[in-house]
Length: 356
Ligand SMILES: [Mg+2]
Image (cartoon, rainbow, N blue to C red; front, top):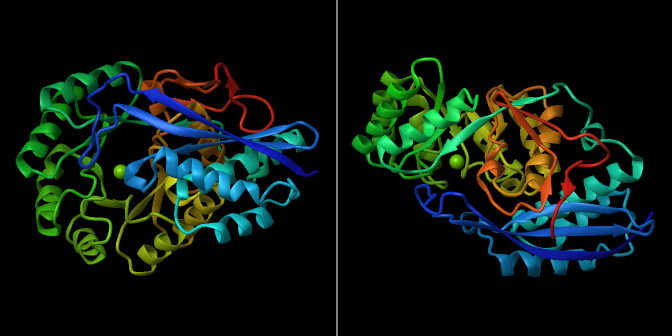
C-alpha cells in the first residue's frame, strides 16, 4: 500500500482568553498545519503540526518542512512506518512539531488501513481513560483563583498554575488558588524556565506550605547544572519540560539524575515514536512521567491520548484537554467527563472532521 499524495492545511484556533500567556510567550491564537497523507486505496492519515515559537516553529517554517519531507514519502510503503521515519529524521535537522505531524499521520494511516484504533497499533490499552490536569494562564492571583474554581466546578481535580519567576508574586498566586479550591485539589506550578537555580530552590521551599505536587521546568532549558541543583535541594518533585525536548535529552537527564519526572509532548519530542522512547527511558530509570500540554486541536490531543492509554508508567494527571479553551477546532470526538479524557471509537485516531 503506497502513499500517493499529501496535503497541508493551515488552521488557526483562537484562545477563548485572548490574554492567555505563560512566562515567555503569549498565545492569543494557536496556529498550526494539518497534514493529510493519502494512500493508494484513498484512505487518509492525519497529523497536526503546532506552530509554537517556543518550540522554534512558525506556520511558514512548519509548512516548508512538511512539504520538503513529505515529497520524499510519496511512493513509499504506508505500512513501513520505521522506514519512513528514517527518511523523516534524515531530511531535516530540528523542527520537531513538523516531524511529529508526519509521525502521527503515518500511524493514523496504518491503523486505518488495518481497521484498528490507534492505541492497538501502539501496543494496546492499559487504561480506558486518562486523568486530566488543566492549566491556568499567568494572571493576577485573584483571577487565577476564580478561574481555578471554575475548573474545579467542571470536575477537574488537578490544576497547573503558570507562574512568572517572581518569588513573592508566585507565592501569592499559589496562596490564592489553594485558599480558593481547598486542600484536596492537586496543584502543579510551572515557571517555564523563569527562575535562576537559587531562587527556584527558595520558591520550592516556600511553596511546600501550599502543597504543590510538582514544579515544572524552574530554570532555563540549557541550565542542566541548575536543574540538577534544584532537584537535589528540594523534596518537591522537579519535572523537566523544555529541558526534555527529545528522547535523547530525556536519556541524558535520566543518566545524570537531574530530575524526578518528565513532561511528554508529541510536538516537542517529534512524534509518537519519540514520546514512546522517552516514556520507556522514564520507566527503566524510575522517573515519573505524564503527557504534558499538547495544546491544539482535538486531532493532536487524540494522538497523544491514544499513546497515553498504552503507557503503563504514567505517574500523574496529563494535560490533554486544553483543546477545550480553543475555538474553531476542525475536529471533534473526544469526551471529557468528571476530570477524565476518553478516546473516540473507531479506527485510527478516531476524531471526526467537522470543518476545514
Ligand atoms: Mg511546561
